[in-house]
Amino acid sequence: MAIDSYRFLDFATRQVMKAWAARQEHGVIPFTPVAKPLSECTVALISTAGVARNDDRPFDQEGERRDPWWGDPSFRAIPLDTTVKDVRLHHMHIDPRFGEADLDVVLPMRRLTELSCERAVGRPAPKYYSIMGAILEPAELVEKTAPDIVARMRAENVDAAALFPA
Amino acid sequence: MIPDLTRAVGVPRLAGISYPMGRPLGRPHDSDGQRAVLRATLELLASASGPDTYIELPFNWHESPAQARNASKDLPPPPIVELLRKKPWLLANLYSGRIPHEP
Image (cartoon, rainbow over all chains, first blue to last red; front, side, top):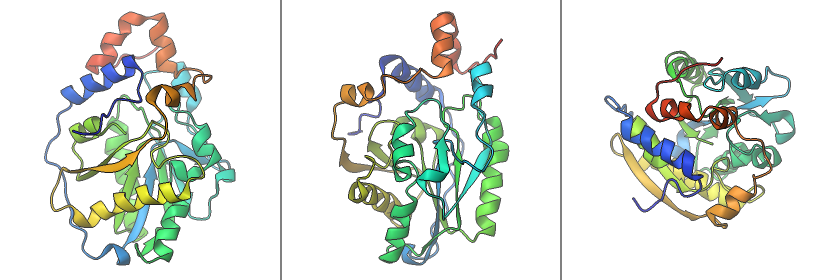
């Protein structure tokens, strides 16, 4: 692999992530071909930066401080008209200042609108979604949160979604 | 970001990028750079023909890893790092994935 996945991590984090990657087992990997050209698709975005609107419930940072092995497994919807002034980033393992200076660093909403204006993609979905990163026990995230997001995206006629880890 | 780990989980399509954590699309206010990353990522939707398709995006970060880490040096560490400084023996749990709970 030409990309050194780990070059930006400190030594301890790098060792932990290598151990996780070596231990991880996956079952059958799902794959759904995209049924139409990207220029006709409704595209949604997901960020793991813990983005929540200031008028919505924040992600539970206090819970993670009480029990550092825990991470808030819930999700937040980010409507299309949201701007950087309307949100905070709650992921506690990254520097939130970059995304709070320019939301497109973690959730490229304006960039996707631009790509749809030049007809490279069909249209942006009406809502984007965010979850927290660094959740050590992902059972609820996998079994409840992800299907909930999928159900919403189906209702919003989303054809394809791109998830950006933060 | 950490494509090794994402691939190990098993995803339909993956675009790896050698950018630091917290900045997957690039630098703040670099619209052209962010748009190039998003465009290359979305093109994978159409170009991938089967599961576990992996491409590496040809973008380079403008700082060294040490410079990128130093930019966030003044932040408090995440709670798990603080805990492991106090109870380093728990690092074995983090490695192995046997997750205990506090207190």
